[in-house]
Image (cartoon, rainbow, N blue to C red; front, top):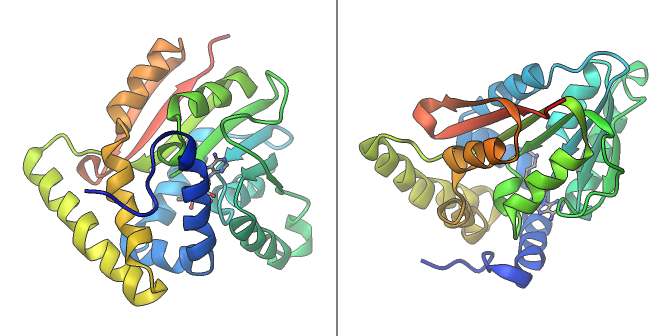
Length: 242
Ligand SMILES: C[S@@+](CC[C@H](N)C(=O)[O-])C[C@H]1O[C@@H](n2cnc3c(N)ncnc32)[C@H](O)[C@@H]1O
């Protein structure tokens, strides 16, 4: 199976950028439709695990339209949301400005590359990424960068599509990603390929098991996997060793 928005290696970033430029305006609506609104609950869980305190610094990588960054900011953290797509960042910024004046001190949204984060080592108390690592040319580089900019003891939290361990459930779920999700993309966004990309990219991503193994290899502590919907979604959690 191939997809117009999936290309391995050097072409990857340009294709992914094209994809999000094409769907940015409908991105939030499609998230609600394809997950039946559940992505909001999963992101809430990510924010709980990030456990930021007022005054702490948090980074949300591949922030897109800003869901996680805005929620982290509501907890009183000083938040930066980073993404390379101007189209997605524009929506994040519009959402930020719509918040009540008292709440909009942050997040700060900036354009940047998740594989080369523009921050010094040991900068953040929590680093999150939602549906981002899977889109990078090298998810290992992205995870390594998250770790580099995290302070010792900081929490790293990764939310993404998963690979259910149960073969039957995995087959049903992959059929949903292959048929229903592109259909929704075509109906509500005029772009089936952009949504067929999810399954294609997932096939090239090691998902929760691979991310957990890498976190252990990188010497993170308290590494945990939270399977959601039988592993169809997953949260990887780890702490940078002190
Ligand atoms: C599926 S969206 C996720 C958005 C948001 N985190 C969420 O959970 O809804 C993936 C985001 O990753 C961004 N992205 C992909 N590759 C990137 C890279 N190399 N550097 C920065 N952002 C990137 C895309 O522009 C897009 O906004």
